[in-house]
Amino acid sequence: MNRSIRIAPSILAADFARLKDSIDALDGEVDMLHVDVMDGHFVPNISLGPPVISSLRQVTDAYLDAHLMITDPLTYLAPIVESGADGVTVHIEAVPDPAPVIAEAARLGTDFGLVINPPTPVESVLPFLDVCSMVVVMSVHPGFGGQSFIADVLPKVQILRETIDSRGLSTDIQVDGGIDPETAVPTARAGASVLVAGTSVFRADDPAEAVRTIRANAMNEVA
Ligand code: DX5
Ligand code: ZN
Image (cartoon, rainbow, N blue to C red):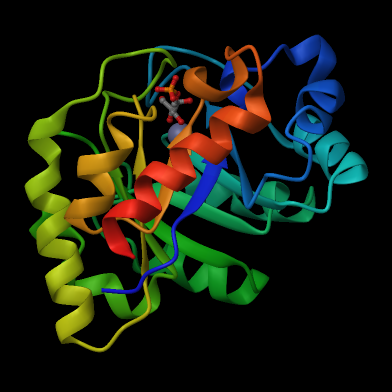
């Protein structure tokens, strides 16, 4: 199977006082930057929002992938996109009927994806695969970086890969949480096409090398 795998470093694990330096340290090895937006309601943590995305937009041409861990994505989709995000992903747990937020994403002309938490069945997103550019399987409980990878979610990735391929879709499958050079291997084998990695990249001695290692290990599974 030939599938290219992209790595999305999560800036949640970077030093927020030195975000530009942290991105520069990736040395062009960045396919996509993952930006975790948390509201203190949907998850028990607060991170960043549109002002930080605007500042990132000024210093990088990388694709900015905004992961909205927020209770009210419909209200905040426009400010997030207008601040410079290239794509937004929204939790199905926050919007059990995602039709209005899908329509808002289309109006804004942004890439759109749905995210499922570890306990959420994969069936909840299957009806929407054709309107998603990406579907995200959380491999940690959202809210914090640096947690351990939950391998029990991998069967959901396999089901998504089989469904997407059998329907002839090109929807990306992103896996988010606890990805490192080891956990990237079974995740790629299960069918992921985008791997989010925070701690294992930004807390590494050489973040660019960490991205290369994760990508190489993952690509080894799909070449
Ligand atoms: C968790 C976030 C993840 C997190 C990943 O709530 O959605 O994107 O930053 O960080 P690591 O790679 O440290 O698990
Ligand atoms: Zn995330």
